[in-house]
Image (cartoon, rainbow, N blue to C red; front, side, top):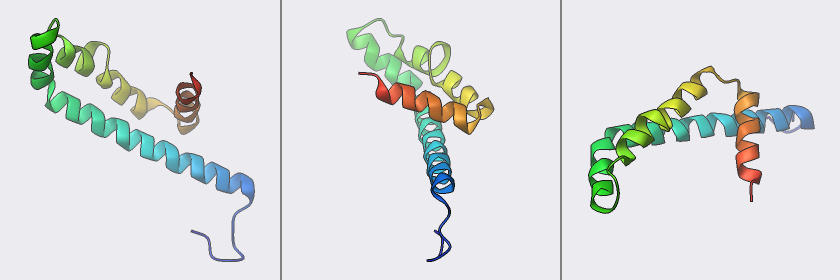
Length: 91
């Protein structure tokens, strides 16, 4: 936090806030990806009771969070931010 009298200009503050938000989103999504991967067998077992027993595999690999994790490694902060804004603005 900037000391009184040393506050950054509004553009700098907005950029800093966006960067902090993207960093938080990256950590949040990475944590979810790790937890889903760690519990893939359990998710598949639970899905087998009511469905086709593919949740663990789909969420982890083919359609899911493994792709998100790779994307977060290679994507720029501005690209991640624009994607999050688009997702959040869908109604």
